[in-house]
Length: 360
Ligand code: SAH
Ligand code: SF4
Image 1: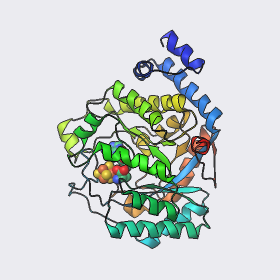
Image 2: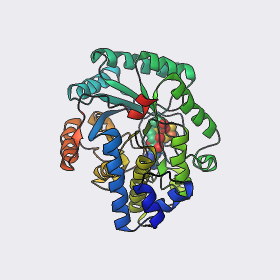
Image 3: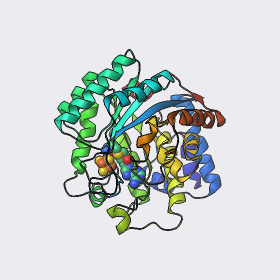
Image 4: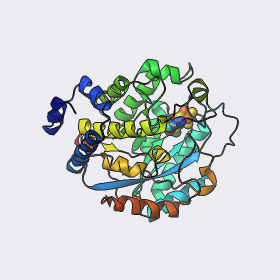
């Protein structure tokens, strides 16, 4: 590693855009090991030695949008669509609560119709009531109006994940149809913050047309927008999408994306210090121990899937999604072994809010 960068990180000095680009280009295994270890130390220092769990419920794959990279986009007619019933969702949430997960994430394709808004509102209230207000609720339901975000917040949701996907508006528009607007997505992040949510965002890593400079700008975007949580992961090519037809994968694309994602996690930790960073499931689609590697590179949150088995194969944003054949009990056991196996403790029964949010 160039000596000036090495000393800058060691002394905790501010990294510039140029530094970040150089760091994202690192490929020497010893340099990478050092970078991940530094990020891990920062994690322990700023967010503690615990890994927090968010039980993920993927309650519907119905989506009005058509993102060019996504397997459940509106125009994919090769999948059957589902929406879980209220009792099914509540039972999965209850399971997460009883198993000490502390909080859950409700995720689905994007819908904005009234029926959907009321449906979500009622499940938030019911989950709050079944857990005596104890189970934390994160939403990941795309772009909505301020009123909708406010209503869901008033009903008890307290965190929201909305990936910007890329902070470069030109790249964003190459990856989405014309009626999907970068500025709207960005404005949503601001609205969420104003309302009082803990706000999470993130990007896809290893996208066609994406450069190291774009990724450096993504890291700076997180800081400029004062985000509390980061959930970013590798782009995984889905055969039934326009992006796959336009840009097929090169050989070795998966392992390049894995390494780039670990570098992004490490640099996000070094740059932002006290935010929550997730080791996302897509990492595990590229390597069996991908999520553990994420934790060792500075992430402190894992989102075990608690969706009942019958729906898992229908919620494939990308192919080779891990744990499709497993049930939540298998996932709980397996994850515990994996997390404890790398010497981390699990923050059971806690919301595990980001210290960054508490500070602001
Ligand atoms: N509809 C909501 C939430 C579900 S999609 C939304 O879009 O915000 C959640 C995330 O899945 C998206 O933000 C996107 O970054 C990710 N995703 C979609 N297609 C993907 C792919 N092919 N590879 C990796 N991640 C993908
Ligand atoms: Fe829908 Fe989200 Fe997929 Fe876009 S990324 S098509 S909004 S589910």
